[in-house]
Structures are given as C-alpha cells and as structure tokens.
Image 1 (tube, one colour):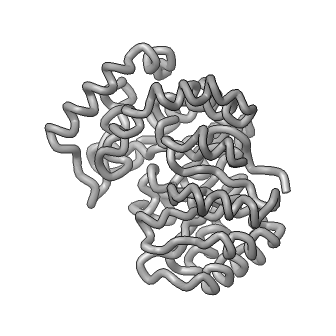
Image 2 (cartoon, rainbow, N blue to C red; image 1 turned 45 degrees about the horizontal axis):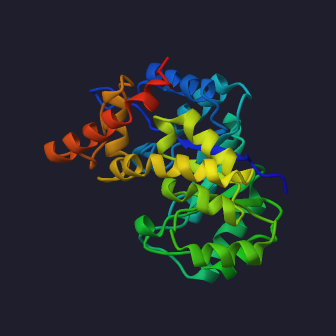
Length: 301
C-alpha cells in the first residue's frame, strides 16, 4: 500500500478570533506558509488543531477550506476519529465529501475499549469508508494503548494504511514494525523521536514543531529517512530544547504562544485550554530567542 505521504506532516493549529470563531484568513496564511516551506502533508482538526472542541460543521468547513486552498499540492488528512464508532462513521462520510485525502482516526477515548474492540472499531469504519485510514494512537490522552499484535491484525485491511504512533515506547515500535512488515506506514507523533523512528523504518512524522519550523523539520525528516543520520541527528539535537519548550504545557498552548510571538497571530484558545503561566511563557520565549536564526529563515508570509 502506498504511504499517504513520506516526510513531515504538520499537525496544523486552528486559529480563533476573540469571539471564538475560526479565523479563516489566518488559517489560509498558515497553509501557504507550510506549503512554501516544503511540508509534505497537512493535518487538520487533530489534537494540535483543537479538533475535539470543534463542532461537526466547523470541522467540515475547515476540511473544505483547506482542500480548496491546498489544491492538490500536498495531501490533506482530516481528524475524523471519536470515542463513538457510529459518530466517527457519520463524520468521516461527510468529511469525504469535502475531498480529504485520508482520515486520521484517534482511538476511542474515555469509554475506551479492548484490543478486540479496537480491531472491530477500525475494521467497521474501514469497510464503510472510501478514503484510507491512519490509526492514531496517543495513550497519554486517550487512556488506552494499541498493542503491536493489534496493529498486525489491522494491517491486513486494504483501507487501513498507516499509524500515527504517539507512544514513545521504542521497543513497542520495533515490534510493531516487525509484525506489520510494509503493510502499514508508521509516522511518529513525537518530535523528539524523528530521527530514531526513521532509523527503525518509520515513513515520517506528524509534527507540532512544523508549525514554526516546517522547512527545517521537513529537511531533518527526509535526511533521516534517506539514512543521512549524522546530519539528521545533529539537526534533531540542535532543537531538542525547543521541542521540550513547545510541550512544556498542554498542547497546543505553547505552540500557539510561540506562533504569536513569531508574528503568526493564531488568536485564542478554546476552553478548557487556557493561556500559559508567566513563568512558562518567559521560559518559552527565552528558548525561542535562542533559536531566532533558524526561525527567521522561515518567515511567516
């Protein structure tokens, strides 16, 4: 199965105005900034995009707008997962009408399920949808974790093509890649593990860092995939403190704060998310200023 993309996909933020409405003008600029700086895919309404705070109609508007703006230049992945199988199906079917290229579907959260339940959940959706599915595993948020054997079972479905793996357990990643062979494309969901995961066989990253360093993240990821590990590891190490800083509070609080500081006014957060404390913000700004030369090479349009 051909990967949905290879390289660095951005988990794009969603900008809101002071009234809590989506700021499509800024959203358009963010998309152009990403494409101009070589991002390999754009992911809309994921965790970083505050997808769980958006209504169905808002998600569909974002998908439609992004599809028209991207105009086939890079793949568009839409966050269509939820903790309800039937709600996910309804949302995903409507999302397909907007032209998204693939679904990013998070595991059921809160009510959760068993490993067998995960297989049934994703198989049911894959049987009924036309666009390919990338399974999204983020146990720190959902309270459940997909086991390698479950990935192996899902890998035999022709419409389940990939995994966003946000579990930092490298041993588990090794086993998952081994069991699935080349039937699933794995994308790491942790910016601090880009080079390590590429060494093991991942096809790329779905990145938060790319919101402010799209060209750098693309180059680092491609170098790692092409086994230029000396260069890629040097790049990874050079931004380790910046990656820590943009995850120093609940995502996407710090990355939105960083983008505002850099002139990309993404506006406000949606509740229950709240602004950073003064101490955390000062530390974030200090680290951003340390990396000013890198960041200024990717000026916001």
